[in-house]
Image 1 (cartoon, one colour):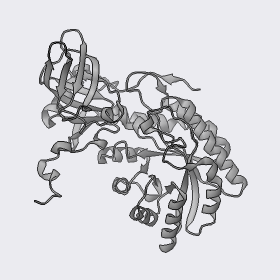
Image 2 (cartoon, one colour):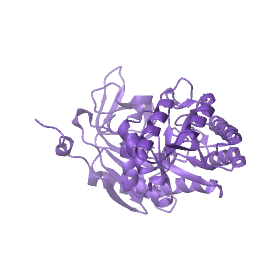
Image 3 (spheres, one colour):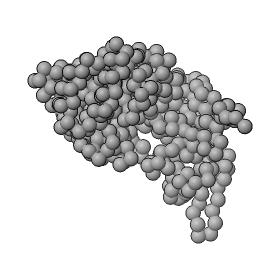
Image 4 (cartoon, helix red, strand yellow):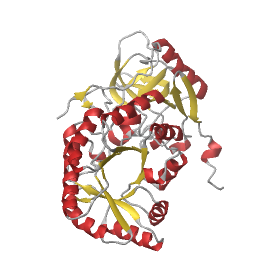
Length: 424
């Protein structure tokens, strides 16, 4: 098994390029003062570095890095990755259209999703995407029918379920037989034979994705070996694929603990695949953008009563970051400017009228007061993308920091915009 590495979560206070801690702290304060809180701040240079780490680790082996838009589909983020040479992984027609708007060609987009509607299939077939990842025999029939009706051939890859435990949170596990995703891998050969005989289908790949936030290499390696073995058996039957889509799921270190080195992950995939001669596709999201983002939030209250917990109430809540409420996910939380004094246990909670609206419970935090600015780390993935407007809270702004400058890439939503689709 490849070595794991400690967290490489970037520090937006002090940059390797030589910025001082004071200058970076001042920048975060300037951003908060200019756009208000809550707000998300992304570091473009760190996204570039994460992409380069994956790309270079292939060491010339044929590959495509399909950025998973579900992690963060902000136009500026997607355009940045497109400019670096990424391809796209879309899970909805909305994401397909965002990818096209950001400059991706249809033949650079894979379309994944466990429940594709008739309208989604129709459009995906018409666009001529690189691959539609097929989830079931019924979906295979529907894609074939729409391709024939349009007088074309749809490029398809079959998503296989290898019954491998990703050892991540059960809510983000997708590779077990008990999960809703894909078809059992032992059923795949028969379906590939059927696909090869359909006039409306061209089988181009096999797809496997066993989960998200995976922090050990073994399940990823075993999934790759399983899909490579499937490709070999298909080739022996005369069915020649063009690529193997190994999915995504590589985890990041939210708590500072060890994770898989991304370069070791890529090298393991290449080792498993190179005997097949097939191109590798991967679908990273979190590992590219997660560590590059922080959420800025302001302390709006601090309260404690005798014999009770100490609560730090902030202006960001589950409307800005759902992960703690959904998965009890851990995110590091720090004051932007430290005050003197010893850290003490607190619950960091949001303003939403739900008991699940808490970012941290019994967490050691340095002393803070009302109006202090806090940052929540590692929110570049599944932060703004899962944001919502419960309690009529407008969507928060997003900011991109790049080479010492910053710009707003999404302004704060207004109440009029939030209500624009409604009638009285």
